[in-house]
Length: 396
Ligand code: NAD
Ligand code: NA
Image 1 (cartoon, rainbow, N blue to C red):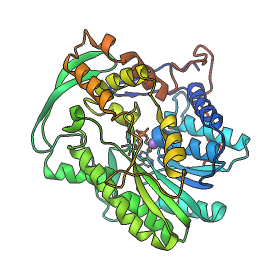
Image 2: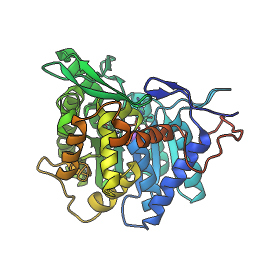
Image 3: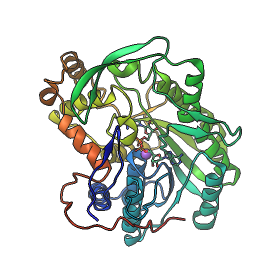
Image 4: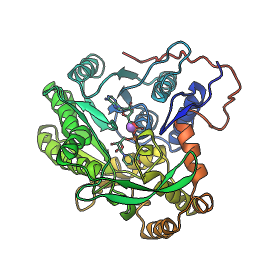
């Protein structure tokens, strides 16, 4: 069939298999051009089908020849209905990995559940023995805690007072004022339950109890800090509380890893267009200024460039991983450069619907958003008939 983008709010209901495939090939080419380095050989990526997790899987496989297992939650295709993009991404990744002689298998299901953890454990035992890296890259609005059976829903709200600032509807380019009422205690707790570190710790506990962590084991989860303009709704809001918890969990996990000489890290990454970040108020306007400035300065990166740098310049560069005063890896260093942030703050002040197309990279934002779903990818023939019924070769 001919597949076109169908937008609803912050998401696109359709995805293009060929566009997703081309995105994967572009990312593989980027990593291969960097040449081989010494690093992880057996890698589990939780949240492996899109965004930073996908880039982590591609970097592990094609940068380090690693065997990879990916865990994700994606919608398969149904007659006449496309799959979600992470399905097509994984299909393309596993096809390319297999061609390159690399082990690549995956599990599609709820990573928060005991069942998916058990399935993953069984797969590692059967195929890999022990693993030396776990990347934790889930972004979800909801989590059912397997111990309590309680389903928690996250919210994106400020804490302590209401918040008003500019935001943009990136589909229409209309800049408007958004006001968000503060979260109550229960909403804060629920957000921490979904996006904090509890599930990450459960994963490492489960893998460790089965003796599946190799000596020198490393695990990394992803966090975000960002600038003053997004602080009230992000880092000092409900999601920021969850990130505080995630960052604290790195220390809790590290304490449990002494027997295997292991370490848990949080890496603070750059703001990028992903399905997760598009849903956060204010962030798209910030990203459109950030992209404009970082592209002008020649320091713009996407997920793959970020993760390539994380592996090559932070995790596997020497025996000592460079971290900040709070023990966090920082690959948001270029985003947070004072001159970049000063320019964003200046553009922010004068942002209107009329000025944004000139002062912000709205076009770049929109293209990246469409790209997430395999649309508007250079070199793809969108008039050609495509089969939506793609299979994921390594799906267990
Ligand atoms: P994303 O939406 O692209 O990826 C989320 C992944 O999680 C997908 O693979 C999805 O299938 C998987 N997933 C979601 N719910 C699941 C479930 N219940 N079971 C199994 N898999 C599930 O998001 P992203 O932007 O790459 O975010 C990943 C991490 O990076 C998050 O912790 C996020 O906060 C962080 N981060 C994002 C940004 C940004 O700007 N996008 C910046 C810094 C840090
Ligand atoms: Na991810």
